[in-house]
Image 1 (tube, rainbow, N blue to C red):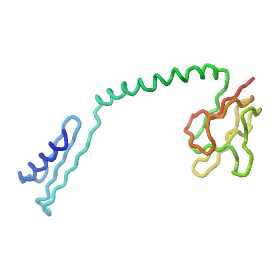
Image 2 (cartoon, rainbow, N blue to C red; image 1 turned 180 degrees about the vertical axis):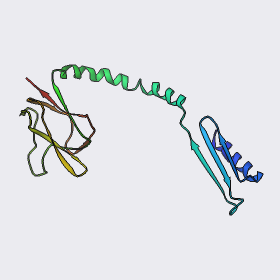
Image 3 (tube, rainbow, N blue to C red; image 1 turned 90 degrees about the vertical axis):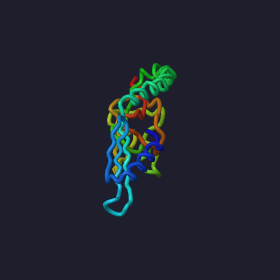
Image 4 (spheres, rainbow, N blue to C red; image 1 turned 60 degrees about the horizontal axis):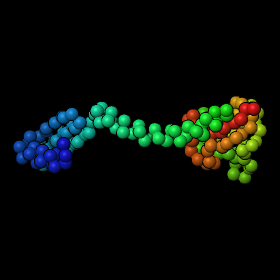
Length: 161
């Protein structure tokens, strides 16, 4: 149902003298209330109801877009398969330093042990130290300083050998 049809329906209901009309179709629910009881104003509510069929059609259209990106990322992943990925345990803001005037916790090439602090993640004004669960050497830092991170987002690649 397009906007012109809705406008025509509103005019028709207003002329008919009905105080309220409800219309429900597959993807649209319309309630038109005229103010003939109150002030003579009319109020219209239009609510779009999600329909499963267009969503199902949208999903296959969206799926091919990420598919070409996956093969381009597959080559580096195969090289990184020997590394351990340290992921974010929480949502927040990633910081490489304990404070702006202090040095970073780790750099690429740093040797780390279990329990070493790798970074801090601020969540709700609390700074959470992220400790290493493995020993090894930092190969890659995957997140920029002061950037937001999601739960389970990769932060570091560690070579355990």
